[in-house]
Length: 280
Length: 297
Image (cartoon, rainbow over the protein chains, first blue to last red):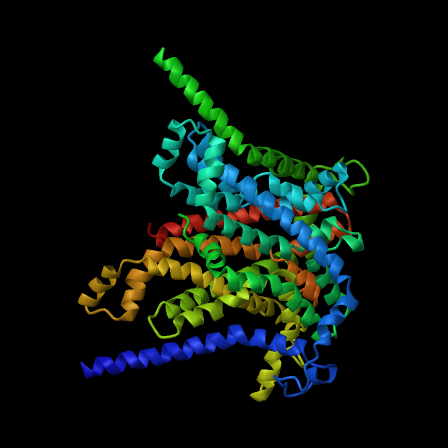
């Protein structure tokens, strides 16, 4: 009995050590970046590096505004991201309702088709879409980045919401139908309120995607005043590659909304990552 | 009479079903099916956007497969990256999941710490790691220097550039994948482990005979997805290295992007895109075939 007790504590210790090593791997880069963003020019290039800045150079964060039209980019990013979220949540939930709550011929076949589109590399449709949007006269506008979101909202989001809708008791919907409720009312007044956690997850995943999207703005937005934060940061890397403290400050500013979402909506955030793994 | 009524109901149901699904159906036709079809046509053309596509048959494909060294270089780079990243990511995040599945004090804090980097993606991730991997003053080489080790040049060295990007991706996705595996681990019925214990099996027997078979569908699914993601690697190379040094990070999609939006050689780039689709489908089909040997449903 004594022996096993010892053994357990030994494994516990080794597990703890391993956990600690991994924790350093994941957390040190963060601390390093925060530290860099607050250092003066001279202190960045010291060997060995110092973790605590001599003086806190908060002005690194304001300097970001001199290096790029940060506020314009911010406005553009906020605009694109919010429209995309609205479009995605609305249309993916509508479509998911068709696949999760309604019975109709052809439903299963189409659902398999939706799943199959997840495999499709974006690159196959990228060039024709560029040509198509050029024909529409949409280049250099936010339309190519926002309007497609209203048409289905992405296969993955449809899938995720459909899985959630399937867990809503059928009797609930049927009794509403017997009371003469239209499907649109059932969708809006019963299913959507019940699905709030799943909708929040979709909204957060869409936020992550749209806020960080680089390839889309890179292709469609050539006008400098139309750029997004992601695009601006990419250009910054190319231009001011030695101004590390300002680059780190800019990166942290761009990450700020994601950090806030993470801390305030951690549950939904983590759900987005785990639900995707539970599909079978 | 009754049959007619059921027919009416079915028709009404069909109508509502298609109505609700219509955003996706319309979107799929315009932003999915049409582009896929026309993309194949472009791949058989010389097309620079300004002029109408000129049909040239299979010449783009011939050029790619038999003449273009950049094409084969980019295939090698991409497969190397995928081959390194996928196993490390799956094994690493599975290990993390097993560790944080222990009932130890403070394990929740570790879960959060491991997960935090998952909120960093895309350009931000590239910008941060450009500094972390800086050969002189970056975090990693400063640390190695402290231990008396001369670190590699990372992104500036053709042999280290791809492993650098793999390391970076492990940092950013490890915690997210860990959560996926953790959820799967927590779904394993406890009594299965008790059976192994009764047979006198240790932790390895439990891991080998219960854990792995029970979560094999999740491992399989994420191997498939991880391969697809890895084959599409782009932003890192575009932002951090522009494909260098010595074209060692000229990944498939970076090459495709360059041909399409730097050279405006849309026909050629479309042929590249179609070959990528075939490669992706081929590798996925192969994995499905192999899965019969090790995945238990």
